[in-house]
Length: 155
Image (cartoon, rainbow, N blue to C red; front, side, top):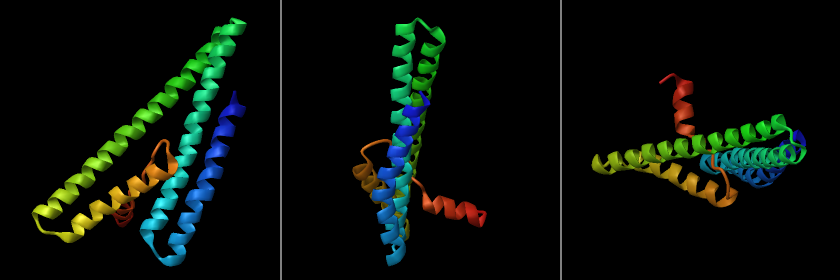
């Protein structure tokens, strides 16, 4: 059921483009990197949500179709789609938990060492996470712009 999967991706892209794209443009035109990052994360998250929803719908459809037509291959394809989406959700949740823990530690270290920059850096990610979560109501996939910047600089 590739058409169902594609419909999910397209829906996610359209919603993400409208919500996240708008925020990203506002962030770029005003020079607010955090707003731009939130917009980009919303785009990624809604596409991911659409991909997951499309995969789940396709998998469920294939399982039912395989059961009705007594076709074990179609049922198996549906089962594989559902497993794949479940793994994707688990991967995102664990990645977001790690990101949250890293930022909580960053804030804690900043408080202990009286380093305001560390506290602000960790807090920004929490704000982004909350904003993306509120706007997407789905699978959240956060981009850690500080980590990406450090990787680009070779640190």
